[in-house]
Structures are given as C-alpha cells and as structure tokens.
Image (cartoon, helix red, strand yellow):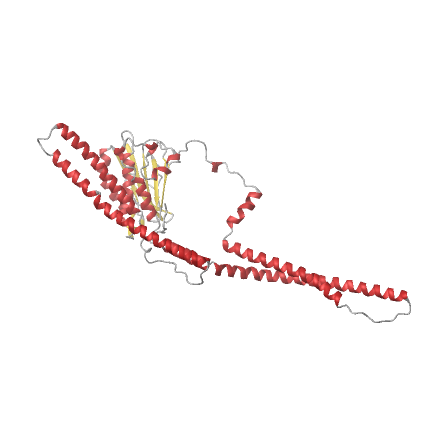
Length: 432
C-alpha cells in the first residue's frame, strides 16, 4: 500500500496475516519443469509470431526476388544467343588453309570470351540491381500490405469501440467494391444487428423478470407472515409457515442474485469518481451485525483508493466478498481481513478469511454461477452460489481483474484490481 494513513486494527504498512504463499495440492505444475523447445519446434512456431502485415510483406518480397531471379536467368541465356547470332563474319581470303584455320580458331576464342564477359558483367550488375530493387520492393510491399489491411483495421477499431449501448447505431459500413473484405464487413454488420436484438431481448427479459418473479414471492411472503401472526394458528401450521417462509426468502435471494448478475454483465451506465476506501467502509459497517451473529471478527486496513465506476455495483462487489468470507468461516472466533489501497497506481481491494482448506484446483471454479466448494449443495443456507460470480461480473464490467488463492491455514485470499482513476474500462462484446 502506498498510503501511510489507514483505518482499522492494523495500520502499519506490513503484510497482514492472510498474505502468505498459496497452498499447492497435488503434483507440481508443468511450468515448474519447463521443457526446452528444439530447433524444429522453434522454426514451426515462427509463423505464429509474425504479424500478417509482415507475412504479406515477406510474401511480396519473395515473389519479387523469384521473378527477378527468373528474369536474370533468361537474360543470362539470351545475351549469349544475341552475341553469337550477331557475331560478324570477316570475308578474308587466306593464302593457305593453315592460316585460315588459325584465324577461325582465334575468332571463336574471342567470341567465347566476349560471351562469357558479357554474361559475367550482366550477372553481377543484375544481382546488384536486384538487391537494391528488392529493398525497395520490401518497403513497397509493407506499404501495400498496410493499405490492404486498412479495412481490417477499421473493423477492429469499430469492434473495440462497441458496447452494449452503441450496438444500435455503431456499424462498420465499409464503402468500396464488392470484394471479400466488403463481404466480411457486411457480415460483421449483420452480426452486430443480431447481437443488438439479442441484447434488447435480454434487457427486456431482465426488466420483465424483475416484476414477474418478485411479485408472487412478495405475495407469498405476505400471506405467510399474516398466517404466522394469527394467534389461533396451530403449532404445526406455524412450523410449516416458518419453513415455507425460509424457502421463500431463499428464492427471493436467488432471484435477486440472478437479476443482479444479469445487470452486472451489462455495459456500465454510470461512470463517476469513487473512492474504494469509502465503499469498503460502508460494506464493513453494513455487515457488522451479520459478522457478530456468526462470531466472526472483521479487521480492516483501509487506505484511499480512487477509481472510476458505478459506486452501487462496487459496494455490492465488496459486500459480497466480505459476506462470503463471513459465511464460509469454520468454527468459532473466525476472522475476515479487509484492506484497500493503491498498488502500482491501481486501486486494489483484498478480502481474506479463515475457514476450511480450499484446494488450489478448485479456486477458479468457485467463480462460476451455482458452484460451491467440493460441489456442496447441502448447506444451501449459506447462499445460492452466485456471490463470487457477481463479483467477477462487476469487476469485468469495470475493466478490472479478480484473483483468488488459498490462504495458509485455510480460507481464501481474494484480490480485486481495478483500473486507475480516470481510466475507462475496456469493453468487449462478450468476455465470458
């Protein structure tokens, strides 16, 4: 933590109890025993490391060099034919046959020397010209590849700007001839239209479900409470009513969790400056009585951590983490540690708790909806298995990251890292 002033039982800038090395269950990971790749594997991996722009550039350069080499070979052969075909005949009358033979032999040797000299000079100068033009061809090839990939870059830029609120009007609308790139852009626009329709349907479903599902449960709760308040009701009826009331409350929590999860996975509609320290303080204060009921002590070390986002969702995120740490404590005198602060210029929230041992191979799965530790569905009173799923959805909507590691001695250490103040969260069509 970078701030020197915090709040809570432990204010010194030292790592609190939960920040120990993670526990590893089972054999060591493969990364601990790296295998050195061979030369053949490295050569095979080269195409995957070169961008398509450079691959097109190298392809253009290779084609130019191949065409230049063929042209040099043709010229090399043809220059010999041209010299030989145009070599002049000298009409000289020699007195003896021996003098004529000697002269013809000398002329043929001069012809061969001229052909070889011309070919050698042509070859050297052609190779130098090919090398110079090859460099120019590579530069032109890079430029041509960049121009050819222009529509692709436009599609990429449009896809990066897209969000749940801009799908209705944001399109690529590529202009040009009806070629493969325009067909790809039109197909992408059609897909955006279908996605917009699907998002609209999802929003309508969530809005309708929030009324259609809550209303009958609220009516059931009212009827059960009225029945339980009747002084003439039998004891069996009261036991049944309390059981049904508990089941109704669990269904209400489940529906609220599902609706909140659906809202959290949308594009953020509220973005304003918020201090994560204040959010964590509010969450700790609201859950103080809940922690006392479970005999869990909540210790906190809260430092200023400015961020940008939705304060309501961030408060729900921290509340879910603290509530999850309280509910999953084992035994008496459990503890939950909460701390906030700036780490490398980014606001960070860390919540750790005592509890049962969490195998490392099950840590990632607990962020999935309806997933519980060891596939436990018996202790359903602890929740519907949506708390950490909502946390992950909220953090992703803010462009952050959430990680969890097993804590030494049992329990979890969950760390949420958000973008720095003023940073806009990156938005994707689907991050799940």
